Length: 301
Image (cartoon, rainbow, N blue to C red):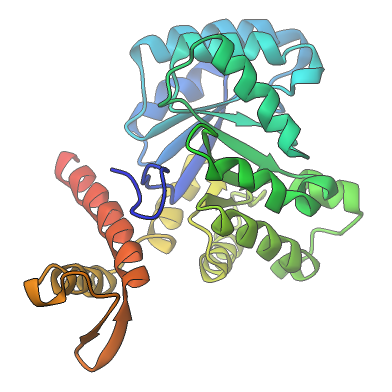
């Protein structure tokens, strides 16, 4: 299903687990996890001497062991010496999306778009962008604009705070006090172009209280989900970024109201004493689609 407002497919991205592509034990467990999406990492999680081995292992793994949710491959940057081989492996592995690291300008996206076009990559193959440098934050609106075109493939921003903190010299304080403006800047850039936005990892998977607090903060900011480093974080992320029953009932009421013959063509309607615009209908359709995905997964489990 696609969003009513643009060409981006509706996806459930509450929990986005990152898994090293060279770790066979971690790869073997992925299929049984409740993560909405899995990032198979060929970049930071894999040492230089193991890049080729990890690439080959991932292609073999995904040939017969795809996760229930989205499969995303994080490649190395095009200028790293590994990027083109990673992209070729990604085409062979047929993931749902390719995650590009350290994106700093629209040109970083366009270079990959051109490469994919030359290789006749299927339109269903989407791109995600890591925003994890000062330049990336500053240029986030321009980068997101690539996702406004039907051929742009760009669907999602993922925030990388570890690298951003390092480059900006901001300490890792509880509550992310000095990082909130940048997090909101990235979120607004994504929303302005109809993209999803995934909050950064929480580094200490043993600190459940801190993780829960950061999940709540990300949800309140408007993020769709959180990037995770450990399976123990999946359930809390799914709960925090989930959809409660009251919200589902409300959006279904909006959809039903606009479907009435007397409301056909109206831009604004009266629903139980409050004015509801067609914009709210578009948002309701997307939320209802995500709720349907959740229910289907529950039925399978």
